[in-house]
Amino acid sequence: MVGCNCPVCRSDDPRDKRTRASLLMSYNDHTVLVDTSTDLRKQALRQHIRRIDAVLFSHAHADHVNGIDDLRGFHFIHQEIIPCFAARATLDALQSGFSYIFSEHDGSGYTPLLAPHEISSPLDLFGQTIIPIPLQHGRTMSLGYRIGNFAYLTDCSDIPESSMELLRGLELLVIDGLRWMEHPFHFNITGAIAAARQLEVPRTILTHLTHQIAYSESNKLPVGFEFAFDGMEFDLQL
Image 1 (cartoon, rainbow, N blue to C red):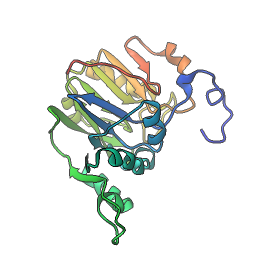
Image 2 (image 1 turned 180 degrees about the vertical axis):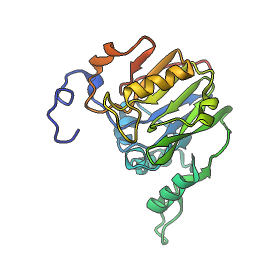
Image 3 (image 1 turned 60 degrees about the vertical axis):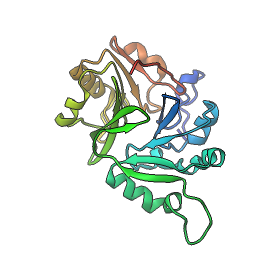
Image 4 (image 1 turned 135 degrees about the vertical axis):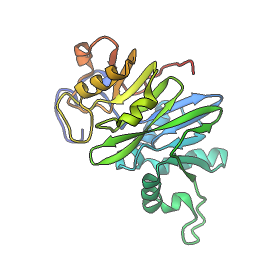
C-alpha cells in the first residue's frame, strides 16, 4: 500500500507483492479478461499477454476498471474492437466515465476500443457458457462469473440464495477474502470460507487480499483453502 511500512509491504516474499485483482482465462484459442484493473499494463507485461478477445466486468469501482486505457495496445496490434460484457449499471458507469473508449469523441479520430454488451443471463462466448452470478457488494451489486466447474467471485460481501443455486457443483472457486477482520463491502476470510463450505467446493482460492495478510499466513487456512498470489495459474477441465 502506498506510504506503508508494515511487515507485509516490506516483505521479501514475491507472493506478498500484490497488484489489483484481475483474472485472465485462456480457452479455445481465445483469451478473456475479467476486469481492467488499475495495474493492467504491469500485469500484461509481466504475464506476456499478447491478445485480449473479450472483457467481462464485475463492477465499475476504480480498482477494477481504471486500466481500461491499456487495452489500446492490444487494439494497435489486432485492429479489432473488443466486446465487453457487464451488468447494465456497470456499462452505464463505464460509458459515462470513459465515453471515448466506446465511440469517437467530438471528432477526435480515436477509434473505439470496446463494444458494450449487457449480460444478465448465460452467454456463449467462444464455445463456452459464461454464467453471470449476481453478488452483494456492500450496498451495491457486482457480478461474479462461472465457466464450467470454475467460478470467480471478487468484490462481494454476500451471495444471494438465488446465486448460490448457480454455483452448485464447482471444482474450483476463487472468492473475495479481504482480510481476517470484518469489512462492510467484502467477505473477510472467515466469511469466504463459510460460503465455500456451504457450496462444498473442494478447492477454494482467496483473492483481493489486503496488505494486512501475509502469504505465510496460509498455514492458518483449513484444508482445501489457499491464498491467491500475482501470476498464479491453474488448469481446468471445462
